[in-house]
Amino acid sequence: MDAKTLKFFFNQFEHQSIYKGYTELNSGHINDTFFIETEGKTNYILQRINHKIFKDVAGLVNNKVLVSNHLKSKFSNKSDKDLDQKVLSFVKVKNSDLHYFKKGQDFWNLMIFINNSVTHETVKDKGIAFEAGKLLGNFLNNTSDFESNQLIDVIPNFHDMSFRYSQYENALKNASNVRLQNAEKYTKLVADLKEEMHILQHLKEAGEIPTRVTHNDTKISNSLFDKNNKGICMIDTDTVMPGIIHYDFGDAIRTICNTATEDEKNLEKVTFNLEFYEAYKKGFLEETKASLSEIELKYLPLAAKTMIFIMALRFLTDYLNNDVYYKTIYQDHNLDRAKNQFKLIESFYKKML
Ligand code: GN1
Ligand code: MG
Image 1 (cartoon, rainbow, N blue to C red):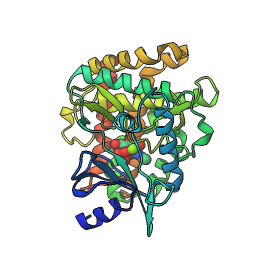
Image 2 (image 1 turned 60 degrees about the vertical axis):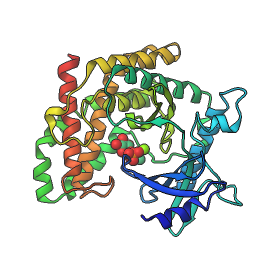
Image 3 (image 1 turned 90 degrees about the vertical axis):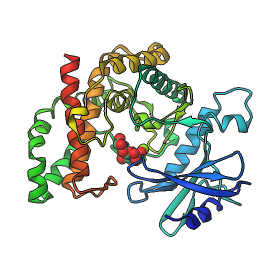
Image 4 (image 1 turned 180 degrees about the vertical axis):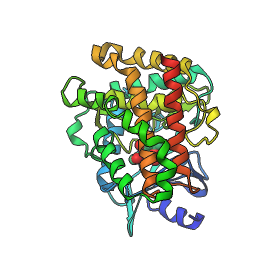
């Protein structure tokens, strides 16, 4: 992507700002994301949304706008300008009510950058884990009265374990011999864990665990902090859909308690940090305890294991499929990501038992 192109797309949106420059943000695996610096005080995040993965981008953007508007309604007496710095705000296209600009097959959207904010790829102290727990708790509280039937199912069965197993089993059938051999070490583990990894799904289907509006991509880099590491808000609301809290709690633990990044190849660096688990849980429960049922609380540890596992399974599946889903930058990238998550599960066992 070049500056001229980005400036063109930036200028399709309704704002008074003058484009100055851009920085690509590489943390996401699906969309292309750019920080847009302007000559003024307001900066932006410009995103090209991956329409191959998100089949209904218009619906996805509509979800995001609805959720943001709902979150904003929770603040009293705040001007639009203040709220733009507390919750994600989407900019409309010039002379249009749409919040996305479509050119050819590509969809673009623009958000206002929250000033003085930072994100983390790994957690270095338990204060951050605690704050992240509070952020998710807040998000779930504030969306608990949101009418979820307004949301489209962005990716049907997104965290459905049976769906992910069936994708994996198909991938096994079609994989190349080389990739199959490289993945072999993990196929037994995937088979052995099958029953346990379906427990949460079965409780959900039986109605024992309630469905709520959930974020569905709570990795630590999707929590925004101020420079003093106080939580501001959850970002990347692409996958907000009905789900169970275990998806969000577990997916957050998956990255918060990993002593290394998701892409770390040196597995010795990958261990599960129990102290951060406790800190995250404390922050999360401080916000949500009163509204959670006994069964929801009981299954928080299994949520962690299940969500680490589901990501391992998805990375492994994409590896077997020759990398058709996640962005990769080298040949065995997805396999390395899967190995990283399997190592985290192993460490989780040791620490939790
Ligand atoms: C993907 O694109 P990104 O980084 O926001 C994925 C998540 C995974 C995550 C792993 C739509 O999110 O489910 O947890 O990678 N999103 C989708 O880093 O598949
Ligand atoms: Mg995401």
